[in-house]
Structure formats: C-alpha cells, structure tokens
Picture 1 (cartoon, rainbow, N blue to C red):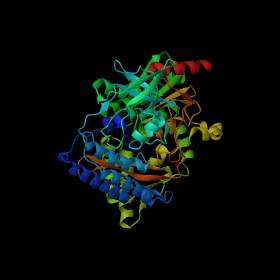
Picture 2 (picture 1 turned 60 degrees about the vertical axis):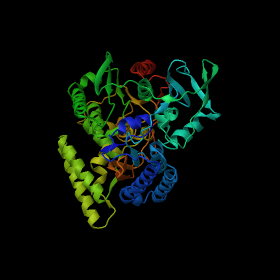
Picture 3 (picture 1 turned 45 degrees about the vertical axis):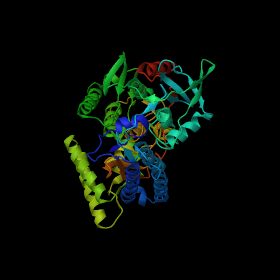
Picture 4 (picture 1 turned 135 degrees about the vertical axis):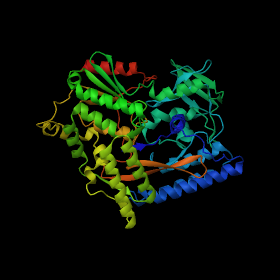
Amino acid sequence: MFNFICRAGIAGMMLAGGAMAATSAPQTADQWRQAAIADIETAYRITLDNHPGTHDPANPAFASNLAKARAEGLALAAKVADGGGYQAALKRFSTQIHDGHAGVSVLSGASKKDLLWPGFVAVWRGDSMLVYASEAGGPPAGARIDDCDGRNMTELAETNFFAFDGLSEERGNWWAYAGDTFIDFGNPFVARPVQCRFTFNGKQIAHTLNWRPLSEQGTKWSEASFNGPLLPVGLSEPRAKLYWAAMPTFHPDEAQRAAYRAMTAEIQEHRQRYLDADAIVIDLRGNHGGSSLWSRDFSRALWGESRVNRLRKMYSAQQQIWWRASADNSAYVRRMAATLRDEKQEAFAAEMDRVADGMKESLQRGEKFYVPPTSAANIGADDRALNLADDRALNLADDRALNLAGDLPPFTKPVYVVVPGQCASACLDALDYFTLFPNTKLIGAPSSADSTYMEVRSQKLDSGLAKVIIPNKVYVGRPRAAGQFYSPAIYVPDLDWTQQAFLKVIEADLAKR
C-alpha cells in the first residue's frame, strides 16, 4: 500500500529530506571513517535480519549479493575522510543491492560540503545527454554533450553517477537522474570532468568546465529538468473536452488527499461529462510513489468499480503476498494501521492489524513469513499485481471480461498517461491499473522498475546521518516481473517537459485517430 523510496542525485536529496539528528556530526577524518563503517555494518545487519529477500526461495542469491554490497561499501568506508566520502560509501552499499526499496538513504546535511556544478544543468533524453539550461558563457541549452576528457556520456554517467546512485539497468533512471553526472556531490572517489565537447546546430564546441557552488537558479533548473513544471493534484481543462488529471505524488499531505478525493468524486458524479470527452490525460510527472489507493480509486471512478475489480483479480489470480515476520516489521505494520485510521481508511486499517497479528504469530512459531490465507485477493494484491499491457491483448479483446451486466457504461475515450523516468513503486501500480484498458496510451519516458519487495519502512542509524530502508513483504507470482519497466508508446524527447509540450504530442496523436 505504501511503497515509497526516493533515490538518486539532487532530487533524492531534496525529497528524502530530514534534518540532521541531535547527534553532532563527525569532526575528524577518523570519526567520519568510523561512522561510515559502523553505519554500513548496522545497515547490513538490519537488512539481513528483516528483508524478505534473505529467505526468499525465488532469490537464493540475495544474501550473497547483500554481502557483496557490504564488502564494496566497507572498502570505500576504509578510505573515508569527510562527509562526502561517508555519503559515497553508503551510496555504494545501497547501489550494489540493486533494489530501489532497500539500502540506506543519507539524510540531507550529512555532508557539509556545498554541491558544485559547472554552470549548466544536464538532462538525458533518449540516448543522449543534453544541456538543459546554462548560465551566461556556458554551452547553449539544447546542445548535445558528446564526451568529456575522452569519455563518452554513457561511460561517464556509469562511473561518476550510477556507480553510487540509481539503477543504470533501468532506462527510466537515465531520463530522470543521469544529468546529475554534472553535479559534484563531494564524492572523493570520482574524477570531475575538466573539458567537454558539445554539438549544437551541427557545430562542435569545446568547453572547459568551471566548477563552483550550485546556485539557487541551478537547483531550480535541476528540479525542472526531468519533470518540468508540476501541476497541483486535481483536474483541469486546458481546452474544451480535454481533461487533465494531475497526480504528482501518491504520498499526499492532507490538502492533497482532499484534492484526490475531490477529483475522484468529480469523475463519479459527472461521469457522462468524461464519457463525452475528447481525451483524458493522467499526468504522473513528479510522482515517486506512495500509496496505490489513489490510482485505484481514480481508476474505479473512470472505468467502473466492478470492471476494475474484476480485471484486477483476473491478473493477480496466481499472486501471493508473503510478509517477512520480524519484530520490527510487525511493529511497523501496526503503526501503518494507525496511520490508515487517521486517514479514515478503516477497512484497510483493520486488514493491516490482521497482518500484524499474523506476523507476530508466525514469528512466535519460528516461521520466516506470514502468508495471509487469501493473500491473492487481499488488499495488497488487489492494489498492485496486474499484467503489462503487451501481455493483455488476448484477454482484453474478450468483451466478456471487459463488460458484464451491471457494469457502468464503458469508458472508451483516449486516455494518455504522462510517465516520468522516476516512476516506480506505487507509480508503477498506477500504470498497472491504467493499462488494463486498451484505450490507454503511455507517453513520455520509460518508467523505472521495482523488485518484488515492497511496503518499505525506514530506521535511523546510530550516527543520525542516514536511515536504512527495509521492505516488509514480497510478491510471489506477481505478473510484473522484478526489474520489468514500462516503455511509452510515444517518447517525448523535448528538452522542456511542459504541459504545452505534451498537449502538442497528444493533439497530434488525436488528429491521427
């Protein structure tokens, strides 16, 4: 239900947030070194003791892979002399686990060194690194970055960024995060590029990089580079009969939760208005995940509750959810139930209490997992595991599955879903829902991907500088495989991901219909 972890670069530092703990930061090189070693060792132990992968029969290599991540992290930790090195060592540990729902998240402020940049912000589009925006005297916006110090952009990004952050095997991570190759996070284990070659309007330009503290303007450009200007949660009508549903987060605050409920109520109460629409756009720019309840409720309102429920169960029929039984995991699920009650989600809160009880009883029996008796139909399975679009054509062509007596009138108008590269976790759950229906078309970038490990919690490490991320459950038999991502039907390689850019693409596609 709640699947959220922000990773990678400036975006990760902004969204992971968290003030420094009351514990004072290390002051000497030896203190930083010892903090890195201790935090990696603790994160390793907590992960080994609580992560579902440790005892997952479908992933026998998990424990050895985790041990390798520990070894690589500790190898760097032994060389740490400051906050930048501390951060890099912990990031290497996390990256080597190859699971966006596991590892450690370094809190903002762990490294006191200012971020540096070369006066321009880069962004990945398609198969190229481009200049997104630049200060005066820098390379022009839109210029392709060909190479730096003799290294092409793929090699440079792999070495300087993805070796410490993100998941390079996921194409969406390139679209979302590869531009942070041109941010100096204070990592002492990489060599900053000195001279780069650019191509602009068919002409090649050489430029020596002048690294300096990241400006406020640079931070704003970086925020906008892979998502564009974000719209608030809610419905708008950029032109008559074309409706735009903005869903920039599935981890909403109180005001955003109210906006989601209002949007769903609007669709339910005036459904004919949307049945008569030219198109509906679902905008996921900015979305890193959270709770899948919001996309589920919207889908039910748009396509019809009984229809969505039926198709959902068809595709999750073989799936089970195994909850990793540990004392800390059980306590987390109990806290989640309380959170759900605060949000007036009484039925889901009661379900989570039953899960917590089951985890506690399994733990007492010495069992590694609690498997709910009807896990293929429980809240988690109902909320997530659906097949990918290209696997569904045969079943969805069968009108008996799509439309039954008692269903609401079918919604068949075009639906465009704007997909950002960082879309993972509950954002992928949303794509699972939306692509159940053949009138849905994905546009934008490739998504990120998930492992089969979900329902994350975090635990502060003793240093106060970072927290370990632990998933609580594993999907067994989930139709969307671990590491599987969505590719858009229409790629949008525009430099600026504005609403206007996507409207242009959508109007052109509607004209073809």
